[in-house]
Image (cartoon, rainbow, N blue to C red; front, side, top):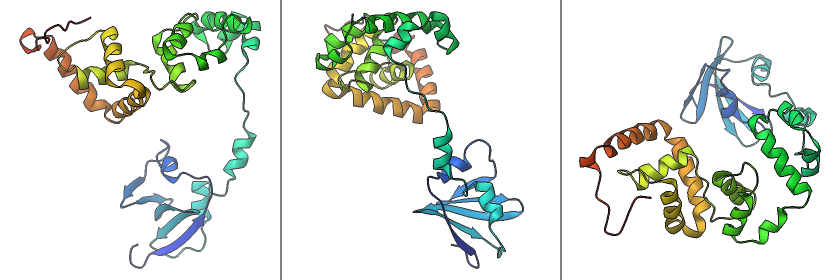
Length: 252
């Protein structure tokens, strides 16, 4: 706390101060030593989140605090606001199956509409039992999912990991692919099949957790990773810099 500061506690619930001040519509705030410092109207103020609300500091006495509560909208009942918003559940397979492709495209399904419709009809007709997959092994469950229209390995592994809880599943998107190549194959360009084989043997039963850590790492270090990956690709294209494969190993 600064000397001669005016202090106040502002009670508020369901409020994320950092997310509010960095929302993209506010540009006058700096984060210093666990406090947010900024100017509201012509008043300098410091804010800090604390249990039950936020601590407030100004350098001059205030006759009222409506200038700040209005700016932060702390008098708004955010819980009531959320309850007033329309909420929609996912439609059932039967409802989707009864829809036409045009109706699905009107819901912004785009090129996915035909595959979604075809899959919904298979599920609604009982030709595939999605609940039964919970009792299958991961390989059988993946095989069943990839038989659905438009479902490839990545989508199947996403469903297996995040919907069914198969921790052996390892979805590979662009960022995870870059992470694998940079961190484990820095001088080579392994094929997707080679990477899948590596993941299964290297991460084993907890591949899903490893995937999430790698994805988080790539999100946090995106700029540096992109630069390093570009340099790695350039180097790997130079025969003199490409390491020889170990005996018996080959690129798929």
